[in-house]
Structure formats: C-alpha cells, structure tokens
Length: 86
Image 1 (cartoon, rainbow, N blue to C red):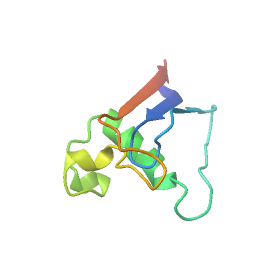
Image 2: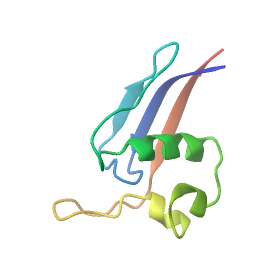
Image 3: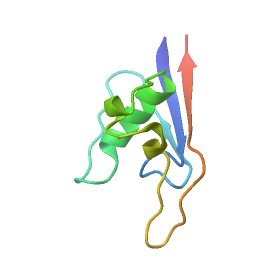
Image 4: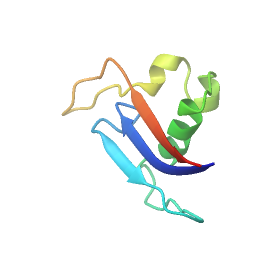
C-alpha cells in the first residue's frame, strides 16, 4: 500500500484546505522553521489512528484543531484525509 495524497484542513497550522500529492518513491519535506513540516507528519499519524495528544505534541486532543491567529478565527474541527493506492 502506498500514500498518494494527503488533504489537511483545520489541523494545527493548516487553517486553509491544503492538498499534497505524494509521488512514487522517496518524498522529502523541506522548508524553513515554523512552516508546518512536523504538522504534515503528525497529520499522517493522526489520520492513521494516533490517539495520544502527547504523541502529537499537544496537551489534549483539542490542540490538533487550528486555534486561530491574529487574522483568522479558531476552527471548530480538523479534517485529514489520506489517499492510498494498492
């Protein structure tokens, strides 16, 4: 089984719906500090069943929901969808 797509909305720092197409082979996630690289990996863990808030760098499960910013209101829910290919 292979990951082919990840869609994240309202999860941690991903307030806007974001879709990542994951190519065949090795995929690297690069970017500056604070841009959400770890949150992508945590979204994968969460959608695959991680139930420990501590395992997702949070104090409680509500911490995975986008908590708002100076320009954006907090969200009420988080969505993560994972596309798989046989």
